[in-house]
Image (cartoon, rainbow, N blue to C red; front, top):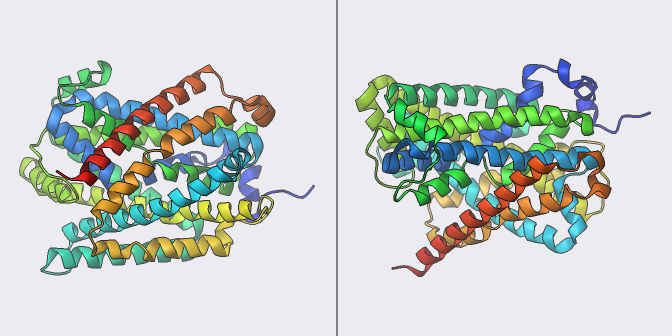
Length: 429
């Protein structure tokens, strides 16, 4: 019988889970987790640690665990049905699908612009290309976007995996080393892990940590990456659970490390300037090694996020068009389609004007709409993965369902808080 998988992944699919190589087994989970750790999450964690200390460490763990269960729900659906989450949403009618497309287009523009700006700031901090900081940041931003486009377009998925592995290693070493070397209060840190509490004035920081770690739309890329690795059918669920556990453990470690770093410093401000301030303060505390290691770790975090979005998000657009045209599950990879390539180019080029044009109000308006995505994902997965006639033996158990309910309630709260905050800012003082 002819294999339903593309030739490029048949050999991978043939290997049973227990004989697969290390990155073949844990790679997709690490990829999706690394993509979800961006500049905003790292800076939020460090500012939270500076503002209220290490008592909020537990929030980085809880947020990562809940995102892990949410991503497990994506894998569970796909392995049970052989269809992507977007195909699952099609069962609710065309309205949900088109609503997601509108959101995806807005998310791609603003997230792409934010990633380009973050990479520009990281590049400028490492090696200024001009005496004018804004010019240097813009040059580095354009360069990162175009280099990312070239690497993803010409390099293929195997090169993408290798590049991400290198960035993750650099990010891990840089951030973890500076966290340990900064000399946090380890006794207080232990209490912050085992005794969950919300310090006075810390509610916003806790919500930011819970909701920020682990990505949003990029989690949907996981389904396409496991398909590229040949994971088809219920027997792969435990493998997916294992690699998601590894990936989100790393996410939790990065979040906790940034809280620890922030707890040893007095930080104020917002935006990407905080990264430079962090590096300077770490240089004063640790020495030149702390300054450079943190900057390289920060660069690796933002560039890996850019690479992950450039590689993963075009699958969503290509899959939407496939479903809209009522084409069957492709016998070739979506990566080879014109839709995937066009969306990759658009991701790299269309948001570039954000390096020059202030779009504060538009970004805030987008935040109001974007706050609805995570609750929608959690709610639909709860429904989809509990229909025995849809998912059969992979129907969610009590633990998975409890985690999804907790995730739904959490992100309803986080989303409402973000939406109200954005509306207050839109109205002005």
